Length: 342
Figure 1 (cartoon, rainbow, N blue to C red):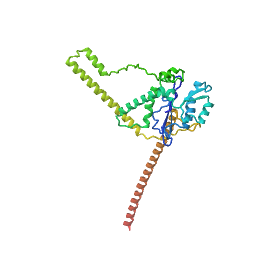
Figure 2: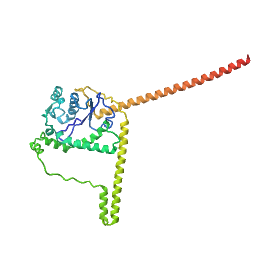
Figure 3: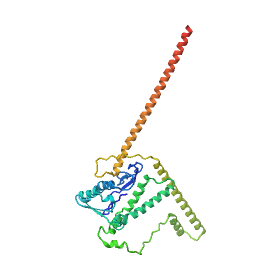
Figure 4: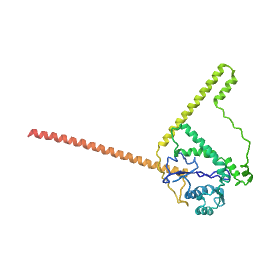
């Protein structure tokens, strides 16, 4: 995943890198991505990790394009803080930054856990939110359906929305001292804080019902105790059945999605970019789906045409056979008549 957060508390569209042997992008992997609803870019590499081409393509097709308005249409300088990954310090990457007024800041080794906002405050809630959603997804399907690449996007998208809130991003920047500059915020992270916040307990419905029952009647009576146990039993049984029902429906829905075979998208590029790799937006995916739909319609029309042609040939063959049989009968009758006369 390629993630970027800004000092004003906003984010740039994240990028997903799928692992694909031939760097192809299958339609089943991105079937849930909708243009206008999901602001995200997708691409693929054989390893599933970024490389020189992906980094350069991201710089041009995502960072420059999405930050141009903040930098007075690209005329003002922008600061880009990165780790020391090899793809960030190539000659082509650095040259492109200088040509487009981008001040490149490469963090020292082993410092991202303190100086990079994503590592400091965003990735931990992202991992927690993703794990929570993955557990819910697994529980609902009751382990009947495996997790596939087509399930990954929706799980990650919801978790990214929880982890990329404005207050989380601002506090992450402040904790790094990069912006706004405050060294005390960094030192405070290494000081032990004995204070802890009390956790709120979320009571279930049956407890509320039992509490009302006890307030309205004598809690020591035998009838009240029997009714309380019955309410508890029915509430638990109802929740279990509801959870099982939801899980089975989700499992069936996921199974149907898995049964659909993915096709390699015809992802056309309108113009050549500076980098060799290409990052796809939801709009480009929508255009690819439209081209795929046209191709499917053409294939179906061709199949219908072939079936009609096959049926026509079969009809003509049957008609010729009937005519041949009729002529044979006529010849037999004329032959018998000639023999009688002779």
